[in-house]
Structure formats: structure tokens, C-alpha cells
Length: 237
Image (cartoon, rainbow, N blue to C red; front, side):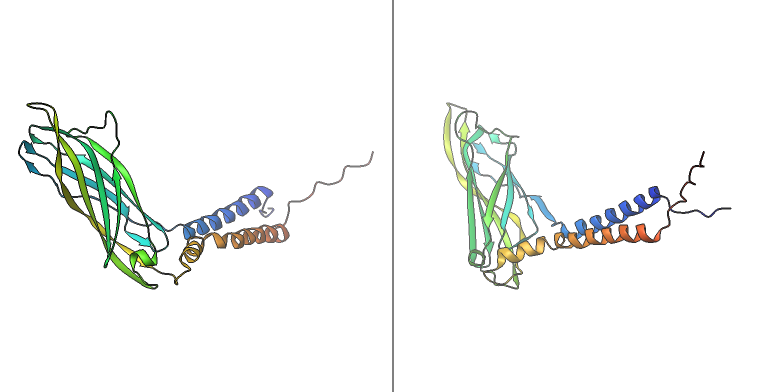
């Protein structure tokens, strides 16, 4: 019985499988998932002459950030049910403070202006993205060290009364804690951006080697795997 030999179809399948495995390995090394911190603050609000307000702020951000990058924090303001004669709010805005040791970074985003910007209980404003450029100077984190950073959100707005007549009143500011994260400085001073780019591209630097190895697989297979028998020459007439 004739022995089984590798056919061109099997050879192509072998080569494609080798390339797929190598590329998957490179991609998995080049992408490092950073855990995300998500949560909601404790209820905040005020007891006013005409009623009681209640709010909560939802937040989302990476649990670890690097000096030399931009930290983006997403916040959404949600209005819980009100009590009394307070009907809605307007002129709202949130100030986010990032406490890193003795340093404080802050950013403020105001709500939209104009018509149809009033928020009623049950409504949500956001998500709004707050961005903080993290540098060695702004964070005070020296190379090779890290620091735990905490977040604080302050809400300012105007409340709307419906009776006895339509009127607005400034509501006292309200502050809530929004969790914490770790900020690291893993690179030498003045080389943060370049080193961070090198780290994020470490997996991509293996791509040429993966392609070279794939080519070697094809060459070895073409040389050492025997081909099928050639058809006999046609008989002379």
C-alpha cells in the first residue's frame, strides 16, 4: 500500500496555522488590559426651605495610570427623587479634584446652556470626560515610585421652585468622594513619553521576527516535504 504524503493543500494549511499562532502570540503580548474602576458616590444633597434635593454621581476610570500620559475620568450626574416644592435644577456643573500626595489637580465642566437644559428628578447628565495630563511636576511622583490618588467631586447648581411662582435659587455646593487609583512613574525623568511608547510597542517589535519565522517554516516545508509523483510522459505516436 503506498504511504501517505503531504500534499500542497496540507502544506498550505500548515503554513497558515503557523502564521496565525505567531501573530496571535505577538498581539497578546502587545495589548495589556488595564482594569477599570466603576462605581457611584453616596447620595449628596441639601435640606432647603422649600424642599430636599438628592443626587448621585457615577464614575469610571482606569485603576492604574502612568506619569507621562493623560488620565481620563468619566462622570455622570443622576438626580434622585426630590421632596417638597423643588421641581428641577439648572445652571449645573461638576468640579473634579485629584489629590496626589500634597498636590491637587482639578478640572471643571459646566452643563449646557440655553433652552431645554433643565434637569428633572430621574434625569442623568453625562457621561462627561475629565482629562488630567499627568506629569512629574503636577503629581510630584519621582521616577521609580507610585502614589495613591483620591478623587473628590463637587456639584454646583440652581434649584427651580414651581410655587408660588417660578423662581431659581443657588444651591449650596455638595461634595462626594469618588474612589481612588494608583499613579506610577516607571520611567526616568524627562524620558516619560519615549519610554511609555516603547513599553506599549514592545509586542509590536516582535512582529518582524514572527514574520521571519513564518517564512522559515514555509521554506523548510517546501524543501523537506516530498511532492507527489509527477505524471508519466505521454506516449509517442
